[in-house]
Length: 366
Image (tube, rainbow, N blue to C red):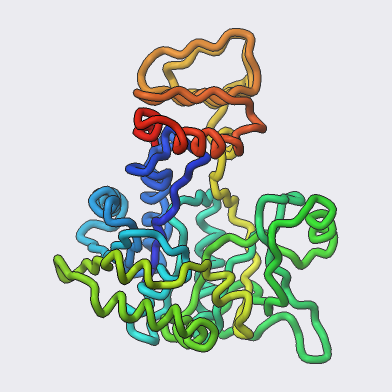
């Protein structure tokens, strides 16, 4: 089976470490392997082929990190996008490159999963449902009423049949999906938690290549046709690389896989799971997951924290000293320094937008 790894995210909320040239999946954010490397290693027990969809500028970076993380002697295939068109076109291009009966596990490259054992059980179950013809999504059991994630509503049992699907080889429950819900306000999120059948949308999927393309052909034939033309016209600088031209890529309608297929298909199932997952979408999330000292500081070894607590400090080699400050985010890179309050780190994207609108020197920091 094939792991399709999507590497198109920019990670602007993790500036100044995540940048255009080195987006967050390729950056060491957790004092260890990068998120991309962790993704490859995590899926190695499940798959025997990797298909990496990434930007043209990131191919060499992805290839070097793949070699570092994959089993010795393993090679990956690459689809290179000159411009991003969201997840549905990326997955379509990948599936068009595979046999129709090939089971695929689609994963982002920039998420962290701490409970690998539970993840592997959920993934094996999802792949069993994929072989049975379902389009499967991973539903994360919500720990609290989060307003920043989309939700998946599992179907309730009805006269039409049980919500629980009978899937040969499934190790955990597989449920029919009733709907996908956009990011809710707090009262709505609280009602989802109380209902007990709503799950965070992880952005991970399993299906056969042919099942996905069948549904895409039914729901978005324009996207499938444009993706097929783009792949047919792609350059092949080596047997394992397909480089899409800019004009062909721009001709593919941009849309997410949720909007284009998953929300409209009648073949969608969800595997509920609890896998210690984080999308690491902000510096607050990095603080939450990194190792901390007795004062809840998550800091590099070059940091002195005096009468200070709850801080995140990532440096670039110089000594950083905190005195009598709490709940700060301090991220030092060779050419830019970010200081913000924990709880405000989602607003880092506003700083990135300001730099985009600034001088040439400002834009060079992106």
